[in-house]
Image (cartoon, rainbow, N blue to C red; front, side):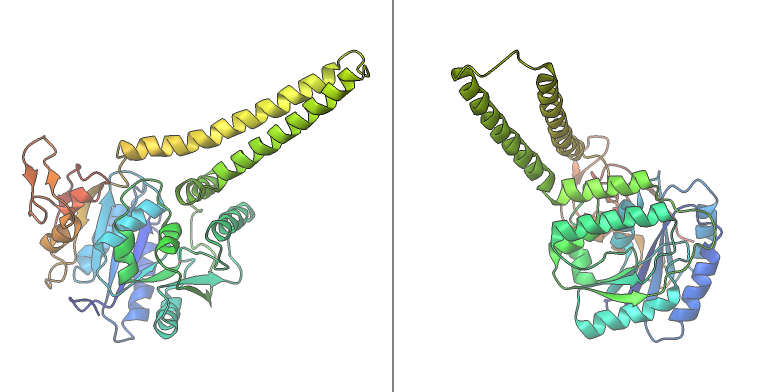
Length: 367
C-alpha cells in the first residue's frame, strides 16, 4: 500500500460526460466501499465544452477526502489527460477507465484480482465484443494491429487497465507531446496481461474518438515508438532502385542489339508517376518524424492545468505533496525569467510542471 494508505487510484479523463459522471461515481462508491481497499478517484476535465467541470467540482466538494479534480486549459487528448491524472494518483495500483460507463465499475475488482494473482505489471480489461459504432470498431482494430506489430505481442490494449505504481513512476518521466500510454507501458515492462470484462453501450452522447483521431493515434504509435515507416520507405526505395537498374540494363541491351523502335510514351509516364509517388510518400513520412521532433524540441506542452481541487482534508494529498512530487527531478526557472527555483520549492507548483515545459502556472484551490 502507498504511504498515505491509498491502495487504489482510479483515473478518469472527462470529456462531454456531464450526464454520466454522477452515475459513475455512485457505482464506484457501491463497488469500492464494499471492500477493504483504500481508494481515491482522480477526475481530469480535458477541456470539455459542456457542464462537465461544474459537475466534477460539485462531486469533489461533496467528497473532498476521496476525489481529486483537475481542469486542463484546453482539450489535449485522452492520453495526455491520462498522464496528468497519473501524476496526481497516489495508489499502489492505478486503474484507468472511460467516463461514459462503457467500462463497468463492477469489473474493477476483477482487474485488481488479476494483477495481484498473476504478478503482472499491467493488466488490460478486454471485452469479447466492443459496443461501439462500426467505424469506431474499425479504428480500434487498426490501432490494435499496429500495436501488436510494433511491440510484437498478442495483448490487445484497452483504455480499461490497471497498472502498478512502479510502472507508473517509470512512464511519468515522459513529458513530451504525442503521448501513447500503451506504448510507454510496453517500453517499460513485458509483464502485461489481459482479462475478459464486460463492455456496455454508451449511456449517453457519442464517442469523442472520430476515425480521424484514431488514425492520428495510430500515426503517433508508429512515429513515436517505431522506425518501421522509415524502414518501409528505405525498402521501397531499394526495390524501386533495383527495378530501375534492371529496366535500364534491359533497354540498354535492346538498344545495343538494335531492337528498340520508337520510345513509348506510356512507359515513360508510368515510370514518372510511380517513382514520383514513391518520392512524395517518402517525403511525407520523413516529414511526420521531423514535424514531431520540431514540436517536441520547441516543448509543445503535453498538457497545462488550469485548476486543481485536491483531496486534502485528511492530509493525504496536500498541494505541497503534489508540488514536491512534480518538481523533485529538476530545478525550474521562473516563468518571467527570474532566478532558478529549487526543486520542491512551494512556489514551484506541480500544476505548473503539469505542462510539458513547466512554465505555465495554474490555480490550486481547496474546498
